[in-house]
Image 1 (cartoon, protein in one colour):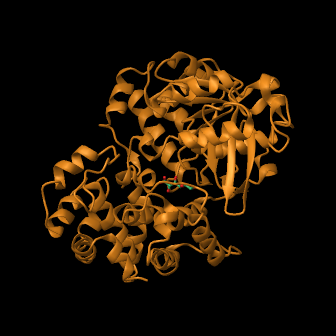
Image 2 (cartoon, protein in one colour):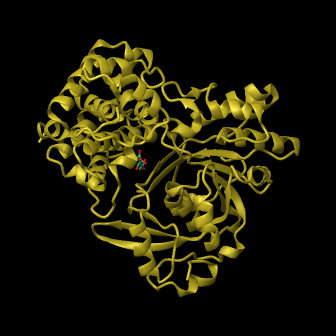
Image 3 (cartoon, rainbow, N blue to C red):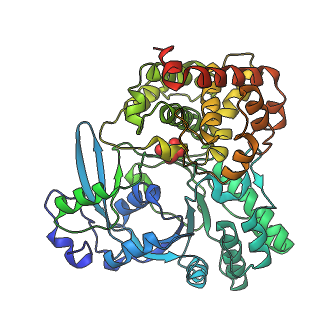
Amino acid sequence: MRLSRLTLDRLPEAVKKPNYDPAQVSVGIVHLGIGAFHRAHQAVFTDSILAEDVSWGISGVSLRSPDTRDALEPQDGLYTLKIQDGEGEQLQVVGSIVELLCAPEEPEAVLRRMADPATRIVSLTITEKGYCHNPATGTLDEAHPDVVHDLANPQRPRSAIGFIVEALARREAAGIAPFTLLCCDNLPSNGHVLKRVVRRFAELRDPVLAALADRLSCPSTMVDRIVPATTDSDREGIATALGLEDAWPIMTEPFQQWVIEDDFPRGRPAWEKAGAVFVDDVAVFEMMKLRLLNGSHSTLAYLGYLAGAETVAEAMALPGMEVLIEGLMREEATPTLPPLPGFDLAAYRADLLRRFRNPRLRHRTWQIAMDGSQKLPQRLLGTIRDRLRAGAGYERLALGVAAWMRYARGFDERGREIDVRDPHTARIAALVQDIVEPEQIVDAYLTMRDVFDADLAGSDPFRLALVKALTRLFGQGSAATLRAYA
Ligand code: CS2
């Protein structure tokens, strides 16, 4: 038997259920990128407030595969969230997603839903590469195949940006005010980045649309919750605990954080009642999270993977790793952050180390290692640029970047091929696969101007720091390099 509205009352007592009738919920939000992260984060905040206002249900859109729709539709959108750490676990069934759409198969249905007057917010978790932007500059990549496609076929878009601009055009034509665009991806000033790429795309389509894009509200947000990909053994465990099948449960940690700029002209759910924090300016929080959490995560992932650690917790247990990560955060990244009055950064860092050690989450280093070309600029390179300007050290950050260079080259320390997932896998392989000298590898990577801007690429000290770190990684391997920090 399957989890669904009909079987909700069969759930064991200990499982938290929606405190509203999911059948009464109507769509107020269209979410693009209905992956695990959204379902452990924004969908859960929304679930908490639906009892007070059923008009904020979510229409969840996949921009690529039909998998999520096909898994959740037979369950009326319901799914289980398993929240766990060393201290225990809690199961919760979430009911805020009331419609599932797959954009490539039903683009008209998606556009109709986005253009519907009841849709007041369009939110996004489409990952860094979904923005079709140049990660080093944050501007639209006008040569991106999806951008080129969507400009040529504006009514049959593929990219999130193409859908947004077409939906805005339809709303304008029908006299319906625009929705608020809510970016929930790990990008610095994510609302600004989104607005910039949407505006540029609109301008390339039609200058009238550019004026419309200028008036859009795109609050920035900082989102945080660690959400590993679901495995088959997770599914089995949930089926046993519920006594019902759930085709796609989500695993996560107790910690959750959402900091949002309060700029929602068409209204918004009272997410603050579920713990979200509304502020005037999110930039500082975003920078803190990207540089401390995500910068550490990427460093852990590349070094950990190379040293044979399958999960983040295993990587944290490698001799020297925790000392390295702690030092990276405290000595190298923290001094680059703007002041955060009243915020205890030392406690935040200690909490991050504890979260990385979470023994119950099997968060694969390989998962975090994906899309490095899109992640490194805001996670490590911006921090390094600030350290260079300040004449300060950045050895651990450089080691993280060098570990990416070693990893993305495509072979592990035993010469086995790595399944490198990155929009630029082929380009990176062509650049560096046949080179063995660390100096030449570094120089080849530094030609990637969409990752390393001209300043960084032209910096001799930076280049030398990378060569030094990469030489250590090739010469001694990752585990021995880490041990030197122990
Ligand atoms: C991770 C993030 O996969 C990754 O790159 O660093 O998804 C991380 O788990 C989240 O940002 C935590 O909020």
